[in-house]
Amino acid sequence: MSDGGHVWWEDAIVYQVYPRSFADADGDGVGDLPGLRSRLGYLADLGVDAIWLTPFYPSPLADGGYDVSDYCAVDPLLGTMADFDALVSSAAAHQIRIIVDLVPNHCSSAHPLFRAALAAAPGSPERARFFFRDGPGNGQGARNGQSGAQPPNNWPSQFGGSAWTRVTEGQWYLHLFDTSQPDWDWRNPDVPALFEDVIRFWLDRGVAGLRVDVAHGIFKDPLLPDLTGPRALNAPSAYRHRPELQPLYRSWRAILDSYPDDGFPGSRTAIGEVWYDVPETLRPYLEPGGLPQVFNFQLILAGWRADEFHAAIDSALAVTGGSRAPWVIGNHDVARPASRYRLDEGFTPQTISRLIAHGDRNADAGARRARAAALVLLALPGSAYIYQGEELGLPEVTDIPDGARQDPRFFRTKGEYPGRDGCRVPLPWSGTGTGFGFSRTGQGSSPAGPWLPQPPDWGRYSVEFQLTDEHSTLNLYRSALRLRRDHPALGPGELRWLGPDAGGLLCFAREPGFILAANLGAAPVPLPAHREVLLTSGPVTGGSLPPDTAAWLCT
Ligand code: NOJ
Image 1 (cartoon, helix red, strand yellow):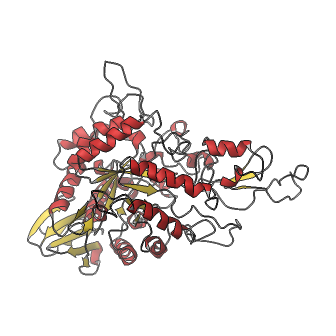
Image 2 (cartoon, protein in one colour):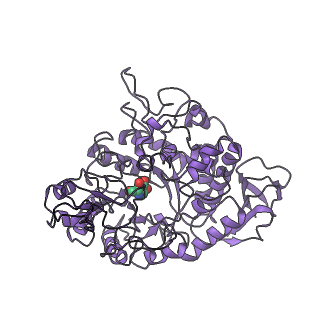
Image 3 (cartoon, helix red, strand yellow):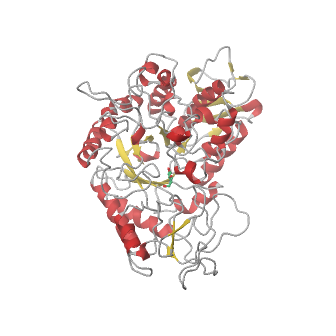
């Protein structure tokens, strides 16, 4: 839909649903599509424009569904294709669009094409869809002239250990993630053809867009060279930010644009998950005719300091403008903001371990800061994504027993990294009931417990509880989203910084007549001149803004 000359996604509020943890309709302890559908009213009241659904496809669940064994089906644990269609049409009735996850870098080792590759011989067309290689034959372990016992190169898996696994007859296959997630070789013409079909399959079913998993990583240097020297984590490399990506994304954009929405081409979006060290890296992805959008992770990477937030926002805006790189403060891969902001620094792979070591210290500050960060997020120009549970102020669950953990990162690092389960714990909907209302069943049968254990005090974060408290985080989000929808200064557009970030004050104006002021420092700061206070993230009295508090002001 085009509205006044801009496309819906340019200033959309998109709510990320991790389906297994959102709402469980059939009582098996795992969230599902009917559960989500039954809660669309909640999302409509919250005021979101679209839902990004993380993978709900058939999967052995070695990586929370990012190990896909069938790209064009619904995992039976989560529902049926009829449930998906019903979800899309019910969501549309609430003016909510659906964005689905596309996982093009790798599939599951249970995917029929990978099974066929395993069953086929080295050098076969079946193997050519993936990266099967011989290890260098260094003599040690080489069997009768077959492949060597060392992996073909030194690439690490993102989840720990080598990116190569050896198969019985001696070859190795590449997996940038878990062993069970073999990487596709995108230079093989079967692969782009397969994904074109997948993209059309979901667009034909009425989805408004795609979130593209590992969008920076799907092409590899064909020589698969060793990584050498020290390198920044997400800098361009033999498997990151390759120039071959741009023509591919132009071809996808052409497909998206061939599906007008309400007669308006350009309405279907694709948003790339592109991790970077410096926002400049995003520039090629946003060339005309390329991906409509990429994620902007600046607010995840910034520490809780006004100068860091200011620099992070500026550097993203310089490259992307607001609309093409939606803002986020969390997702299913990073520690929850209400806990993360207890530490002053931005997110790194070590953050979750550091939070565990930190114990309960600063818990209140973390909660206050996450509320303030939400007001910053929602005042910025362009679109923003909210990860389920952020609107409830859920903390990271840091004490999941090892035996209950699911994340391959935990297993592949032998526990060195606790993994991402702590931000994926099922949502609490009510103060009581199995899983605090997460699981519902009819006919008196008793539901199973949630697939990841919830903390015993989770009821105080529940939707039911927060709806009755006018100062709750849920009501803060609801008010902010309502104001954002109605205020002419919010949504697309520009911002103008006000003053230096003296004393921790982060402050910008948007026209007409709006100021965001957030105090990321340790002492109260005077509120900027204003006519009216529209909304604050915490108590504000007597013309000064307390630490860890943000205000929306009218001038
Ligand atoms: C990014 C996804 O967000 C994450 O959850 C997943 O583990 C990796 N890509 C691999 O698919």
